[in-house]
Amino acid sequence: MTADDLRVLAQSTDPEAVLALVGDELRVLPGFDVAGGQVVLTKIQLVEELGEDVTDVDAEVLAAGLTAKLAR
Image (cartoon, rainbow, N blue to C red; front, side, top):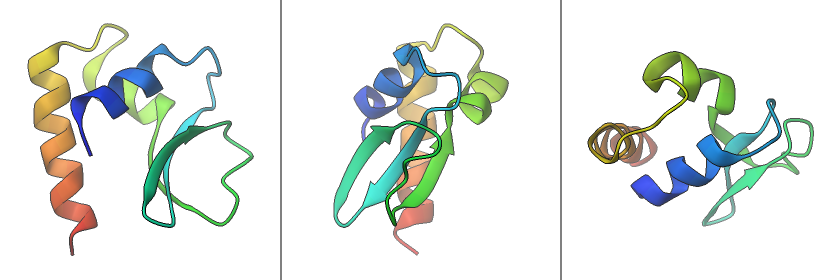
C-alpha cells in the first residue's frame, strides 16, 4: 500500500468509498461494491483519522501502518 492509494480514497467523491484488497490488488470502490474483497479502510475512517486534507507525511505513516496490518 502506498500514500497514493490513500490519496485516491481521500479524493473520492463517494462519501462511502472504501479501500479494499481484492485478490492481490488494492482498489477504491463504492461502499456497497466490495465484490468479495477485504475492506482495508473506509473514507469515513480516513477523514476521522487525518481530516479532509491528507498531507504527504500523514498518508505515508498511515499507509505504512496499514501495510503492516495486512502483512499479518
